[in-house]
Image 1 (cartoon, rainbow, N blue to C red):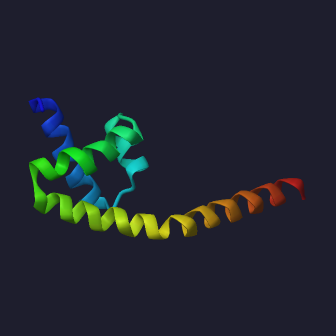
Image 2: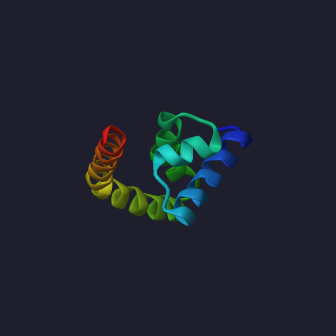
Image 3: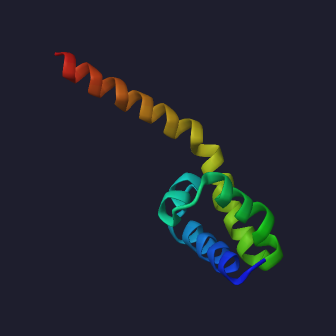
Amino acid sequence: MNKRTYNRVVLEAEYIIKHSATVRKTASVFGVGKSTVHKDMVTRLPLISTYLYEKVKRVLEINLSERHIRGGLATKQKYLINKSRTQ
């Protein structure tokens, strides 16, 4: 792993921990794809730091468990906006 990749992985991990960020949000902040962030966190980070990996893993598990709630809220908001436009 080159130095640039190493630094990106560590910065992504620190960002996820600090902001309780999702993979999607982290990808947009760092200008990489969701798949890249996911691979960084699942494959590369354990090789760099098991401490950071465990902290990131906890945040991502929480995000996963809340995903269906956020999706439902987004759908509700979408329909409320569309309803107010038609009235």
